[in-house]
Figure (cartoon, rainbow, N blue to C red):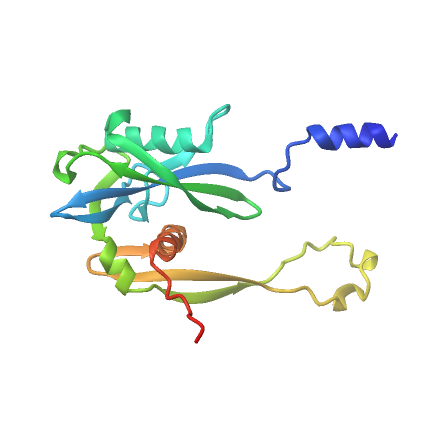
Length: 206
């Protein structure tokens, strides 16, 4: 029995519990006027969450890697060839009970003015890296409580209805950008990327 359990565990691919939907995005870097910018999309009215700011990306298709999905979606949404995209690496991903979002950082090897985006995009804009390095987002905390159905089996829980369920919290970042909205997951990935690439002051011992 133990040999069988060990073999099952050896062959098992560890993954989060649940049925999360898998997404991948590209955090695109593009050079404009001699400095590096992050490129953002404003989602069009033809897709979900119209008007939101996002990175190129979408759902991972069956048999597709996260990186391949991020590249494919970027090619489709920005109408650019594969050779125009250079992936530099991946940053930490977003994981919840419902979704997994992997984020890759890539360079777009073309000019901003030459991009002809598709119908999923209403407009594009860029923000210089130095802006984010000098302006941190403001985080706001939202709380949510569990709501149980009428037939919830409280009798199977110690203290029943008096059980102290822990409320959830979510920190939501907002950037102050002139003329554009940048908040939520896209802002969080932006903030994390900037934190990774910003040099840290090392403490020196006397």
